[in-house]
Image (spheres, each protein chain N blue to C red):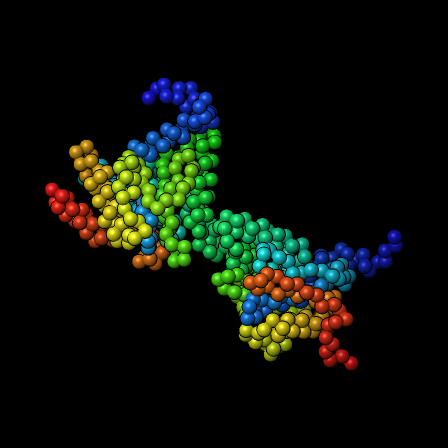
Length: 249
Length: 218
């Protein structure tokens, strides 16, 4: 690794001669080391799925959360350093609550995304605080405006997506996502498709240990509230994926 | 310039909008009205005050209490409303404006003397009137009255208010109310300023002192 940005990569306060900030790019690498998270914007909501590698049989199921609620109506899925993700989510919760207290309205998702983006950017300015080593996907569903999905990277760029993947397997996942017809898909179907991508495409059974699926959604069915996908649905999705495998064999 | 004793004493008192303010919902929006006297004790500091203060394109506030306090709160709310509406890309609701007024009035209640009526039009809810009185509570009402002159109008409003009035009926309701309050309340006077707020925007008008209706007068 030495030699790539030697001398220009010590602090986020230094540009390289070809105009890059290496510390921020190294932060991206931290995200790429983590397991994959996927977000899909369907016709009636947004679904998140995270591939969680089970590090030890002693760990309780559902621990080490990677999806979080902000307010009742917004969900955030993280990839990268989970602790960094939790810090940004804490900030997001504060923003959402302050907005609600001040204006009596719930915070619109694009306003929250904008503010988080600005918050993340601050950490790319100084040499005594490091950039966040995590990417976030932010999703929400509104009766009138429909579903929205945004992704914030460590360099604070926030883009709106129909379907997005972050983490180790994001390239393969993005290829699979581009094959899906998202505008016609319901959230229940999306749960199955995400399970399929995470279990079959992204997760390498030979290299890595067992995985756990953590999924959440904000959709018409949950009346616009962000909730974890019911365990039954996840189990059915996993069964369906296994069934698909058998068919192809 | 020679100054006589008693006006000088008045000038030392706090400038207040001893006032009459009325806001009423009508079928297409809201009508708001106010008198135009700002007093400092018994000296009328301004006899042509404009108490109808815009905080956004379709949202006005009517100020009563300390002139300084209400002016600064209105400018804070106007600032935040503008910032939010640009961030969100849409016009703010009257509810949002009213809740912001409430936050300022309630959180700083020890320092302030401000009783404000927030009225305007938004697409979701049509015309809305919110009353944010002294303590910093907030209540949505079909019509609201405030200021020192409002004490003389409770009976009048209870008897004459109707839901879904036409614009002329509502303007008549408001202007007669202001006129009566000006006649009875020493801290209210001058001209009657009225504004109509609906989906077409804000239309302001003034009814001068000599045009105000004369009620029972010996």
